[in-house]
Length: 437
Image (cartoon, rainbow, N blue to C red; front, side, top):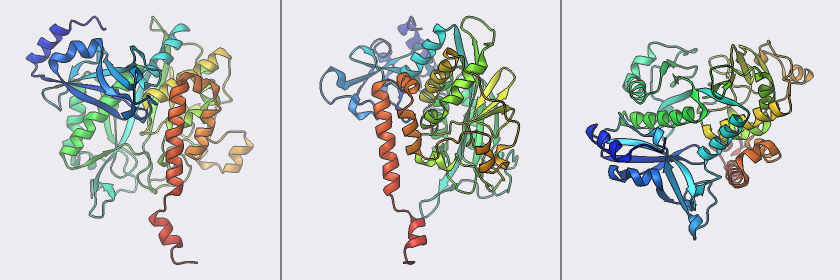
């Protein structure tokens, strides 16, 4: 796709009213970063990339001096498109390069390597990502609360009264993304107050991640214009379900339209590496308030705590469906490039070792006591970020997929986050302990 005629593209974009390029990359946390360039700089953005100070980007571990201190986001021509919600701007996604070489700790480059490893076996991955999110506002005391004061049903899923009240964000969000080429499938109210989901069609792994980043950029902008806060925090409210980032995964022949007949070993690999994958798919301390089993205001949390699979079983880690499986572990805060790179590495290990998954589970796992789960030999996912980081650090398959630099930087950042959380003294602690002893 780098054979794009940049000068012709400039003229086409000018006729569409574009005057500025937004060159974007994704940092280790899964947050969009970038800068604006004049449209005339498109040839440079494609050939060399937009330059950034490497040490200023979270997770790079780059030095402050020398040729390796510069990070370049080199444009992927296939991602160039105008932004309907930002007239005059076109987005161009950049892959990370350092000192003229693909940067091993760039999340998008990490997923590229994983996709290439899968292609060497003759397979490709298609993924449908389902982002759940909250529309919030700040109360007078600074707390984040649901934006819609009337959104109070005990079971708010699919509430058709709440959707129109947020049409100023939800409708243009779907329309703008459709104009960018995403196949919008549905928008609905989810299971918590102020929570929604927008689904778009499946695509190859890299494209699906790019689509998710586009979705987040549009949603942040549109919510801010309405004075609201778009949030993909995994668990904003203790008594309500959190936000997942469920991924529907299917394996296909690399050059054709045939499904992979060996999906069971791939699934077995994902299950076998689930502890380490949890650090990538649930990467914040808040994530582990979602990954627990218990009652919520609406009756359930919908978050998988147990390493199991089952046919159309939403209480299992892997929900199996005809021709695909749904990976229910990731939450809304995960970096999709890293989560999918880890998933592919785990699945390939299952294929290479011809692993077989355990027997499928048809029970409602949320209804079983923990003792019964343990008696059946069903493992429990890590219950803290520190525990998940320990599992990732000792998982040679996943750390090899991430590479030395990214593994080191990711674990250092996440261990610092866990330590900062452990040292934080909260209002809850003041209330519970302040005047007791």
